[in-house]
Each structure stands twice: as C-alpha cells, then as structure tokens.
Length: 203
Ligand SMILES: O=P(O)(O)OC[C@H]1O[C@H](OP(=O)(O)OP(=O)(O)O)[C@H](O)[C@@H]1O
Ligand code: HPA
Ligand SMILES: [Mg+2]
Image (tube, rainbow, N blue to C red; front, side, top):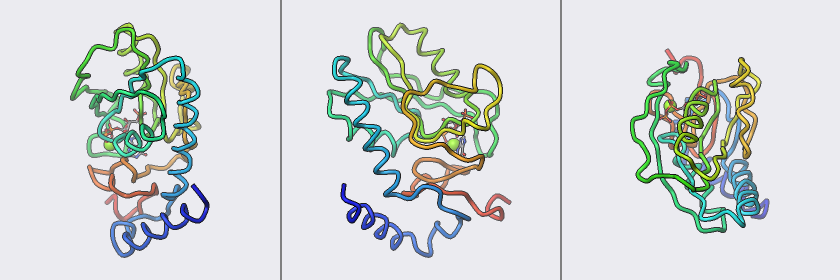
C-alpha cells in the first residue's frame, strides 16, 4: 500500500476516534497504518515459508487475536483453514493469574497438520508455553507462532525467555497495552491502534 493511502487510513481512524475512547490513552504506540503494513509483511513471509506446506491451519487464540487473525489471514496467499481456542489467564486485571484455562478447545483434530498459533501478544509467555506443549501432544506436522507483539525484554526464566516465535510484529515495551484485540476488563479491543492507558483509567 502506498504511504499516501496508509496515512489516509490513520487520518480516517483519527477522525472516528476523536473525543472517544482514544482519550483514555496516555500514548499511542502503534498506529493503524503501522500495524497494517507490518501485518502485510508477516503475511508475505508466511506465504513464502508455507508454499510447500499447505493448507495451513491458522489457530486464533481468543479473544485477543481476532483482528490480527482476520488481517493476517487475508495477507496469506495460500489455502488456509481457521480454527480457534479460547484461553484466559488475565481476567479483569493487568497481571497474569499464572493459570491458563481453556474455555474453548479446537473443533477438529490437528494430527498431521501444519499449525500457526496466532496471538496478539506474548507477555509473561505462560499462555503460549502452555498452548505449544498442549498442541505438540496432538501430533501436528509442525507448530509455529505468529505474535503481533512480544514483551521479550521483560520475560524471566529459561523456558519463557525466548518463546521461539517465528513471526513477530513488534517488540513491545513493558507497559500494559490495549487496542487491536487487546483489552482491559474486556474493553478497548475495538481500537484500531495500540496504546497505553492513562493511569487514572486503571483506578
Ligand atoms: O504471555 P502471557 O502473560 O500469558 O499473556 C498473553 C495472553 O494474555 C492475553 O489473553 P487474556 O488471558 O487476557 O485473554 P483474552 O485474549 O480473552 O483477553 C493475550 O491475549 C494472550 O493470550
Ligand atoms: O499488555 C497487555 N495488554 C492486554 N492484555 C494483555 N495480556 C497480556 N499482556 C497484555
Ligand atoms: Mg485479556
């Protein structure tokens, strides 16, 4: 997409969100056009890597991954199937409970399938660590990770430090972020950009 139409997209969203929920943000970290361009690049990389390994199953982790999965899948020029798991460990807070709960499992078996787990964010790494081990136990042909954001610098512990995600959109600073699927208490997922809330919104 040209710089001009990318900028136009951000201008339209800026107009839509003026005076709305955007006011709850202290700062925008990734604007809509920046996210869009990066997701297209990630889709192109997946298309290249899976030319001989399709259909590829894109497994969205609900709820946070829904906008990312929708955009990423439309940038992959290969036969793709889509399935979902719903897992939750944050609930209403900004810290992981440390317990990953499966709220919805896959609809179909993944034995012999090439699977890409699609996640909005890797934070503590607990969710993906749990999911990857769980899926490997189901004998897929391969499992890779596509995550839009990675808070790599904040992770401690040998197993979680490098999650080995093959496709990562952006490094994320050590802030609790919202937008483009990411929530605080279930809200802000529908923002087309990603940012940091004002401290007073938390209290
Ligand atoms: O690396 P971690 O520290 O495990 O955090 C990452 C996970 O946390 C969030 O999910 P959440 O539990 O908030 O569920 P949600 O997607 O429904 O909001 C996010 O969408 C990831 O799945
Ligand atoms: O920074 C975050 N924002 C929203 N949800 C999250 N889940 C893990 N980290 C985050
Ligand atoms: Mg959440």
